[in-house]
Image (tube, rainbow, N blue to C red; front, side, top):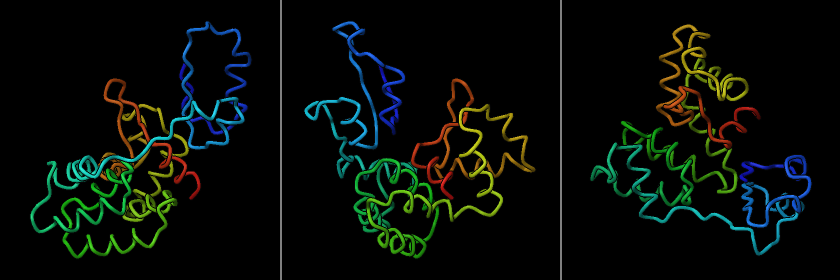
Length: 201
């Protein structure tokens, strides 16, 4: 049994009101960004596994795949890549989003974005991600907010028709790794942090 993105203990109780009714060999996996929710849901401290960030090497490769379409940087960007990877703290979403944001940009643009990124505390992931949101134009920002609030899990083709020139804006948002498409079902996907950021704006 998998309970994903639990943010309130009540959610566990609603879905699994009596754990004793489960088969003894049943494995229950709960993902949450909130440790206290797990504790109050009855999860033993020893059963909580805290995810760590990617290793430096994997972070470097992921960032470069999104900024250069290959696992290593252009020589002129090597030092900047190292600084961005360090600033992202091994968080895959940050690495993907910032890699996509910087793709094809000049070193001076990279340096300006690095200053902005470093001015934000590592724990403030929403503010970090908002840098990419701020890089969208006005129309794309409105589209992103609409998607975050209303269209996650909806058919891509149907949603794109809502906006004038929706395909172009949608593609730009996708290129910045702010949304994804479930290829099998052609449905819009968005990381929870991005969704929450969009709904808070």
